[in-house]
Image (cartoon, rainbow, N blue to C red; front, side):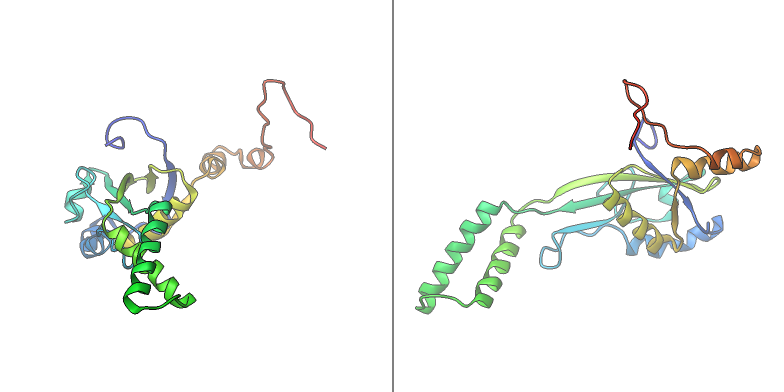
Length: 210
């Protein structure tokens, strides 16, 4: 895992209300509750949940298995099932023709076509293997910083929601300004920090804007 060894790109958060360290052992049921489950295409074409940081097939989770000294480290597995649009259209048209022939009809209603399209899509998805992505999360139990190895805004929103549901506490994103604020206050530079303005980086020098 790159969070254990290697370099990563990650978003950084701070836990809003850190639980007592000994209380983490009581969260085993929640870890299992929100562990990864295979995609159920009749419900959703995607599935997301926690897995072991060392084995994406291991969903039998307990705090003891994901605790590494001062860190809780988890894998976040995301599976998606997609269907080729041209293939779906071909199978749908085949299903329409078969249904018309079987029922000796000339056409289907709009609702019947919609239902048939959905059924065809589900049947086709059930035959596909999902694409699997694995992301990593590390929670420092001393500093209460959380590192998540994905930069997508949408995925980070889902991650923060899942973290809150699992650990019963929220996450505050640590943007550069927010990370600098505690140090600035400690060193008496809070006012100077407030007066900072963003710099425009350009090989041509400063760019004036109207």
